[in-house]
Amino acid sequence: MGATGAMFVVLAGATYQGVVTALERRQFPHPGRLVDVGDHQLHLHCTGEGKPAVVLEAPALGISEVWGWVQPGLSSLTRVCSYDRAGLGWSEAGDFDYDPSRAIDQLHVLLERASELPPYVLVGDGFGAALATGYADRYRSDLTALILIDQPTQAANGARPVGLRFAGAWPWLARAGVLRGTDTVSGLAEGLPDASAGAFRAFLNRPDHLARAANELARWDDTVRLAAAARLDPGLRVLRLDNGNRPAGAFRLNNRAQARAASSAIARVIAAARIDP
Image 1 (cartoon, helix red, strand yellow):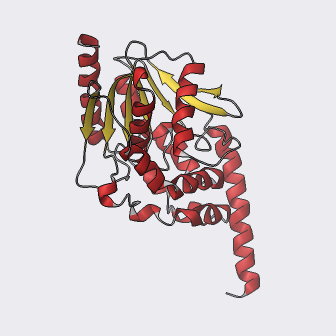
Image 2 (cartoon, helix red, strand yellow):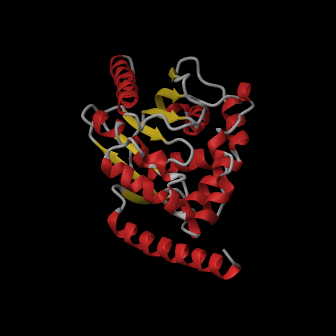
């Protein structure tokens, strides 16, 4: 293929990407609400009623929809809130690049301004577990329990999963329609409930979402170090759920059976927190 042919393919892919993205914006409106946290708005999706509220922190590349199996089940027991970190999913990026310390503070501000009252059971998966650990150190009084799913550790040199190490190229490939045409990244949505999978798949083909995700991954080691330096209160109820069959930071909860097992563990923590708050 000559230069002219290659240029035509790229332009055609970019046009296709733009048209489909516009359609997806209408097809997948945000299920929650946008909350002002200062210079931008974050998307927060809360369902159910009761105390303690469960707050869900997504893994790398993830948005609120990755909890598509977990949140509905727990919502029959108590209040459950998932959200999108700045620049991911339906959340605005704001004026600053990703910083793990700032991300922790933004979650605190988000919950406060949304009038979602503590104490919370904070659940983090993978990359999100590292952030949740940092939150527990900084905002201990907000929490009644902390649940960490496959938290990455410095013992593994904080290594990013192999499949995520080339995320810096994804926004450019998405703009040209290459990712959408090959399902290179959007396969991460497979296994979720249809509605969640559709919305998550759409964002996994969006250059803006992927650019911010790549920005987070560039600070993977900093995020892991922040968690490693955290000093958790011995009195805080902490549950660690580890799936040794998968690399650290991979998606866990798009598998219905794994999601059910995690939900059952979270439910037990909720029950214990109600008995002994």
